Length: 99
Image (cartoon, rainbow, N blue to C red; front, side, top):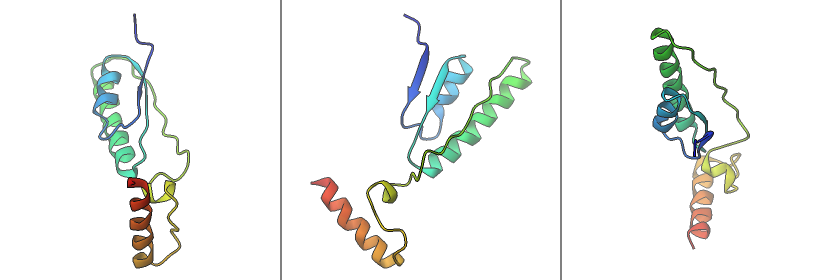
């Protein structure tokens, strides 16, 4: 059975996305962290450059932002609070989630 597309739900630094691209696979990468998205984006630009320099065809990729993606946003921390209060609220929410 041939894989048509590869979902990568936590792309991290983009290693799996990069390998999938180099192997000519279709892929979708996602992550909740800004740093992971930024790192993966930079890595994929490098992969495209490598493929282009080798004379092969390469595909464009697209970055989509579907909303706020840092953990404090999706667990409901009020980002308008002062930093000390925001950290306190984040710690309270983390205790509730970890139960």
